[in-house]
Image (cartoon, rainbow, N blue to C red; front, side, top):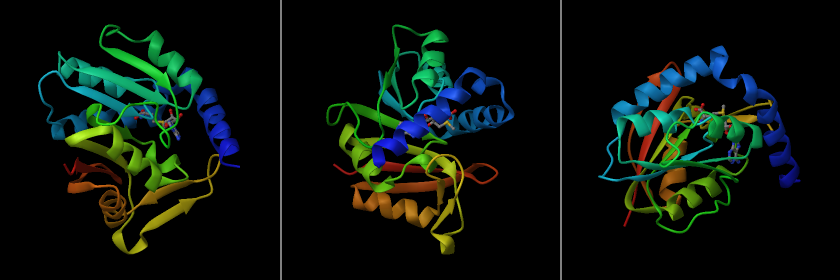
Length: 204
Ligand SMILES: C[S@@+](CC[C@H](N)C(=O)[O-])C[C@H]1O[C@@H](n2cnc3c(N)ncnc32)[C@H](O)[C@@H]1O
């Protein structure tokens, strides 16, 4: 059942991939990436992960802003990754891998920061993704989650759209996911319209 959900999600994004960077939605997402950078602090020579990286635009922006940064993009969709690899201008610093946010092919404590933009809404088991992020972050490493949000009293809203629906979470719900995974919430910041950034730090 779950495998089918991920296969269908992957196929959905495979179809979107060739035109992804030219659609209006992506113009919006790229504005989100730009604003996100204002909240990013990284150590020297950082090793970062972009979870649900799509065509790799956010990693490119990060690699430009931080010239010693090394980055890995992980995504379900083969075609999104194909686009990301074709447009990779930082081949010695950025790599792209296929995989699932719920069971990442990475060692513990490997990353200084994890980024996740407009992808969390697609995850059927969000708590499991938080646990995985916590596992791959070094102590003190940060998780930057930017996605659509809802007001606190709603907790979670589910929309029957795309394979297996999409889900928006309140700031409070995000904090609960973090607390259960050993990630302390440092703050929430509206980036653009209903897209909110939540920053977490891995507790030693
Ligand atoms: C709307 S796109 C966002 C892409 C990119 N982060 C951006 O900001 O433009 C959502 C991405 O999440 C990926 N995705 C969805 N579920 C995933 C999962 N379980 N594991 C890894 N990637 C996933 C999709 O394949 C797609 O590339």
